[in-house]
Image (cartoon, one colour):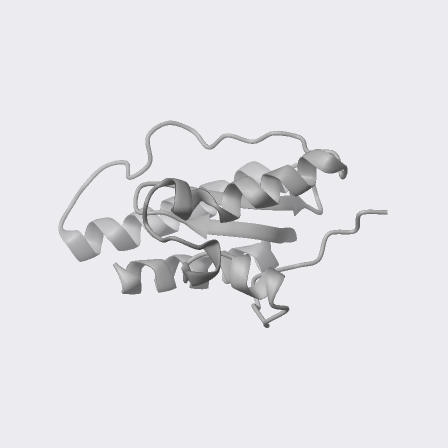
Amino acid sequence: METDYQTYLSLLGRFKKRYSFAIYAYCLMPNHIHILGEPKIPPFLPKFMLAMNRTYTEYFNKKYGKVGHLWQGRFKSKVIHKDRYLLDCFKYIETNPVRAGLTKSPISYRWSSCVARTLDAYDPILDTPDIS
């Protein structure tokens, strides 16, 4: 599973550059992914998600001898204005592993942006939102 998470993060870094997508928070869970981000070119959002989902699914299916879709249904997206709701989204995403019983503290969960954001540690995937 660790290699799968590393592969997903590597793809996330690659495709965020290709599709001009800023990533502000993320959390990789065993059965789903949360990404809080912003397409710098709005029509690129579906292209970014298609590239991510298709490439990771191909990797996963090849590795585990599976076929077909990996994710159930289309990705979900919402417009988030840069206000209190944005902060709530950060909290929701980064505390997801605690709610799921995977860890007692979001800081101890390796596969999210929480450590980098709260301890100001370097994470090449993360961008800083312009909240002005």
